[in-house]
Length: 125
Image 1 (cartoon, one colour):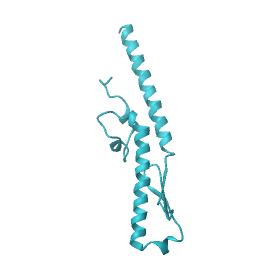
Image 2: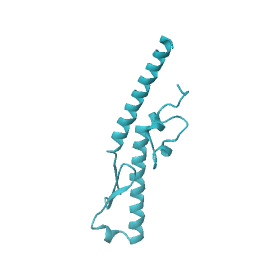
Image 3: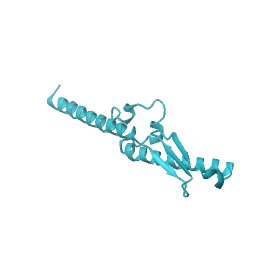
Image 4: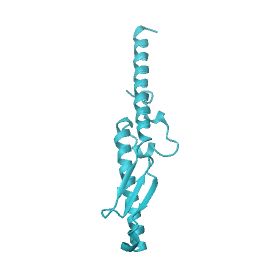
């Protein structure tokens, strides 16, 4: 094996290590992602966590006098959707540059997501 093979192997190893650092850094920042959505009148506030899950719902005590049960339900769902969309946008912002072109970010974020999905496959440069 020649010097060029060892040089190429060193280059690939360095590229792999750099990509792993970028992915691990992005995953670390994703753990802190959250979003808060609030209705225009301030009656309903929703906080979503890193995976877009609703973590907290706060209702202004006056909301019961202002909205019917069906209106309140609709407003809660609207704010959950807004908070979830904000989290998804942050995920795309952080992970999009690391995702292979042929894979949507959303596909890589569910159960079973693994760091190796973000790494170059053999034969890719």
